Image (tube, rainbow, N blue to C red; front, side, top):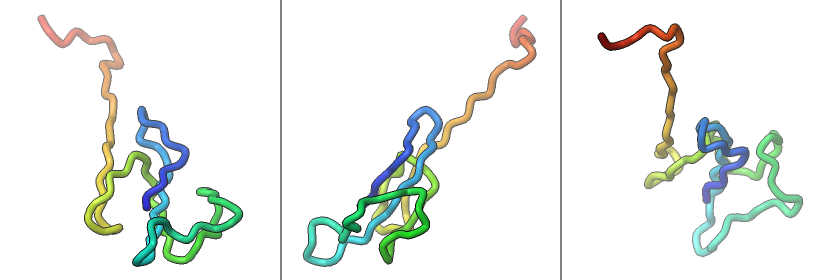
Amino acid sequence: MYVTTQFDPTKTLGITLVFPVPPGQALPNLPPAGLNADSDQRPPGVRVIRQGGVAPGPDPDTYAFAKSEFVGNLFRIPLHQ
């Protein structure tokens, strides 16, 4: 199960937590106190991906995310004649 926190779709920022789902269960074993993406204390087997908007692949090691960058004409130089 993939959970993205602190996501800003305009900047691809965020943190994605990947929770393993045990066989025969619909959801992973989540801590009773809840989740905290900034905490270093996570349940065993949880992976952290320092990207938001992650598209999962066939296994937890394979995923995709969009990265965008704006490059502008900072000096207002005409680019045509």
